[in-house]
Length: 332
Ligand code: TYM
Image (cartoon, rainbow, N blue to C red):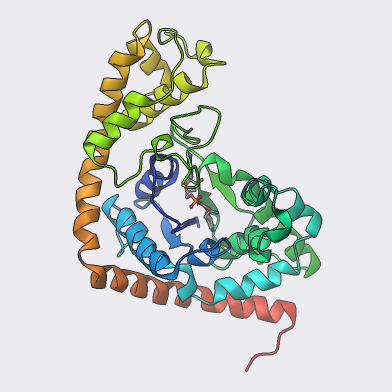
């Protein structure tokens, strides 16, 4: 049986990378699989979060998932801190994962930057909590963007070491599901950098809450190179901005990059950008309208999260009990 788990941090605006790299794929998987989607507020606090903003962002991200078409009845949508098993299993994994493994995590290096000594211990142990999120439910498949691949490899290492150490087959080796034409959406200001919530310039990303004008302006201002668009995808090599914008068009229209090159090859960026902006607006604006409506009903959102958390607790309870037995923890 396949069980899907994935998560998103409530640390500011959702952006087009989150949507195309992950959330839209989640909505597409829900017809086929049993899915859990988690707003990972415990992960968020590995870096300082204003408490009021954290609560507001948790609701906003939940509204984003619902507005993107994820059905809270068929799937389990919840915020991580409501299910204490995540933190509990993360502690066990803190004792399984090796310092050397975590030292290799590129995301920690990027986030901690030059101030490593000042980073929270939580930020360092972040991937252990992520492994706990997934394995608490014995999930088998994890739909994410490219940037989470290394963390999922670590999750496999942790599962394998736990299984070996305790001579069990309790934990599956999870498979990443990285698919679609936009597995790594890049910044609009620099095609070599990932589109991210933490990038200082707001023009570098398209937020899910940007209105049609803002989307069009950001795409118009997006960095390009002086050449015309290529008609052959191989010629996107060494042209990161062109590759990013054409990849976005392909993702938004569900076409292959070959088809996009065939259509726009030889054209100038200005014409193409106008069409890209139209596609982005027509995909995002209906989602935004629904998000706005849902944000006006916080009680409804809290009910979705509460109900999801209850179901997540029920699903995880017997698995956590088995984990306790395997580790040798006494329980009544
Ligand atoms: P987060 O909140 O940074 O991102 C949520 C999802 O969006 C994807 N994503 C992107 N995809 C394509 N291009 C981009 N520029 C881009 N930026 C973000 C991410 O790959 C992710 O799928 N550690 C995770 C959250 C997490 C999690 C988990 C995920 C916690 N526990 C368990 C899977 C399973 C994170 O910070 O995602």
